Length: 203
Image 1 (spheres, rainbow, N blue to C red):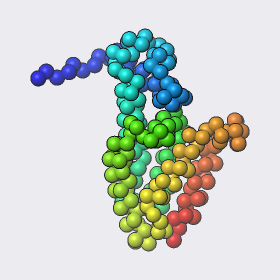
Image 2: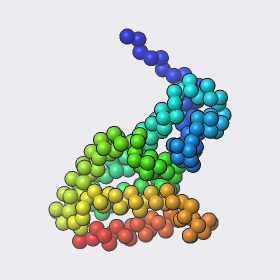
Image 3: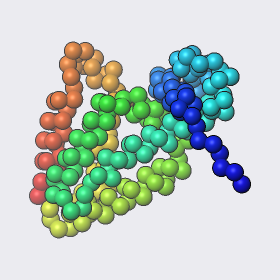
């Protein structure tokens, strides 16, 4: 059986252009409110040309979310069992906050899928994501058992980091309306989260 030919540079570039355009459209309108015509217009391509690369709106959405999940899990993967517990947890929270600052559209795309019952992401969140959280929970529980940090439900500690960091991306309009458009929320947020988790985890 012959292998599929590798994509040319132009094909790779056009695929990425479509994904970039879809990210903008999906993050603004949600999956249901987005159309292939909108994505094609933002990408600067004809709809038939777009369909050459992706057969449907669903295929584009799945490709985006699959790439996103891998990026989204990287900060948690970096938590090192051999490191200092407080340092590792605070560093994880900072990495998540950096992602909220640098990838707000991706965060909203992920949140929109979850709010609709995760029609595209359920296999991944029940598989790869859950397995990673389970593995890191073992590390956190070990640190707690050793008396290095306060005893807390490990998964809920991870959930709280997600909630307190991704909020700044998913509710950006609200955050900036309250603080002022000229105010950078991320500097104060990092200081606040460092203080919050140091006090929460202190023994």
